[in-house]
Image 1: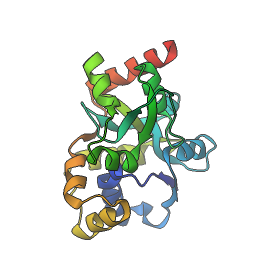
Image 2: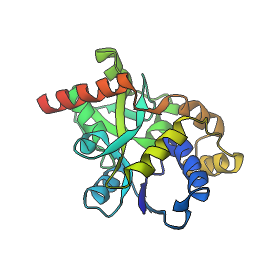
Image 3: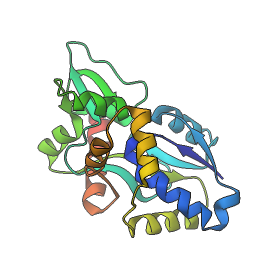
Image 4: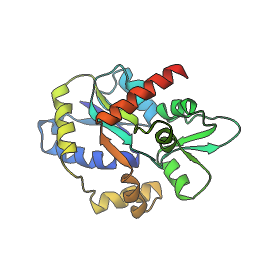
Length: 216
């Protein structure tokens, strides 16, 4: 089993959970990870080089998925547009580049940990999830946990992950802080803005995004 792993802070609780889950299940001997940025993991999944991964919502439409995603109820802090005359996509992204076009926000799209660092510097920016919420009063779904096979396994992952509050061990938090140059306090605060359950309102937001993306 090969799982596409995006090592952004927004998935830190999920990675902590998976480490425990694989140790306590029969998957412990067969789960391997292939690391990369979202756009690369998308390609690896589509070409079946990975069996499952959080796939950018714009690329996930026709694939099987469980009710787990990377979701912003309002603002997200880590998907920004730096105001600029020219529009520049982030090569690491897929959904966020499309979202900027849907919202007609011009500038340089930046995502992930580098975007969070930029946000924490209080520089001029537009938070795309916040703009989406202001316009449609809906959450924005950035990614979905997609899979090619073994639905039962991923349903189990979904159910187990959602029923517990994942506590991030201090040593992992410290490692994440050193890797990203973002303080532990700021990491924990940021994670309050991230939701993972694809509930009814999030599904409505996702369908709205697909509709607007098609028309833009």
